[in-house]
Every structure is written in structure tokens, then in C-alpha cells.
Amino acid sequence: MAIVGFEFFKINVEKKDIVKNTINIANNIGIIDVEKNDLNVGNTKQAGVKFIFEYKSSYEPDFATIVLGGSIIYLSDEKTVKDVLDRWKANKQLDKEIAGQVINSILAKCNIQSILLANAVNLPPPVPMPKVNIDKGPKAAKKSAAKSEKSDSSSKKAKN
Image (tube, rainbow, N blue to C red):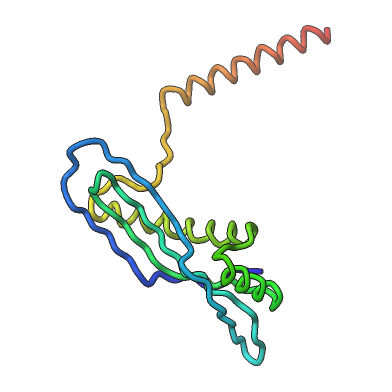
């Protein structure tokens, strides 16, 4: 069970207006379709599934959108592939374990691409960026070191 292929076939970013108020950003990802997609390696055929997806970041109120469409190829044994395809055809659902692997892989690529696209058209990033709080960092480290020194000296006194 491995993800062996990923591609974008649709990349669209649209900025409609200038920001007038607070912007809310909603991200959504959906599996649109699932298809059989075997991979031939030399004389060997490996069973596979192609998941077609759409990732969308909506900047509200109707300010901008980022839409990414693509596919991801997942290889597995013939039985698992058949089970995935049958379940999809029956009720448009996926096994939780496989869905988790596929969606996490899609998010890893789409989050990066959407940040780059947002930057290109001067939009705020659609996913929260990590922040460092300089004021709390060094003070917290000093307090932690001071507590450590006090506990070390207390334990030494107790031993003597």
C-alpha cells in the first residue's frame, strides 16, 4: 500500500476585490472520483487506484478563491483495490485508513501550493503559519533553567 503518483491538472487563483473588512478563510477538500489505475513495471502489473480530488480555499465574503484539482495514485493488492472501487461505486465512501493516507498526502501538497499561490497574488496564506513569540521564548527558557538549578541544589543538599 503506497502512494506513488501525484499531479495537479487544475490550478486557479482569483482575487476579486480589495479587502474592506475581516476575511474568513475556509478550506475544503473533496474526493471527486475513484478509478482503477494499474501500473505496469516491466512485465509486472501492480493494482492501483486513482483518486481525483479538488482542494478549495474560499476567502469570504466573496473576496478570493484558490482551487486546485488533481489526482493521486495509490498502489495496493488486487483485493484492496477491488474493495476500494466497490465501496466507492456503492456509496461514494472510502475506508478510513486509506482515506486518511490519501487526504493527508493531498493536503501536504495542496497546502504548500496554495500558500505559494496566495503569496503570488498578495493574499493572506490560507493555512495558519507558525509564529514565534520572542518575548515569551527566552524568559521562559531562563525561568526553566533557574528552576532546574534550584532543584539540583536542593537535591544535593538533601544528599549531604
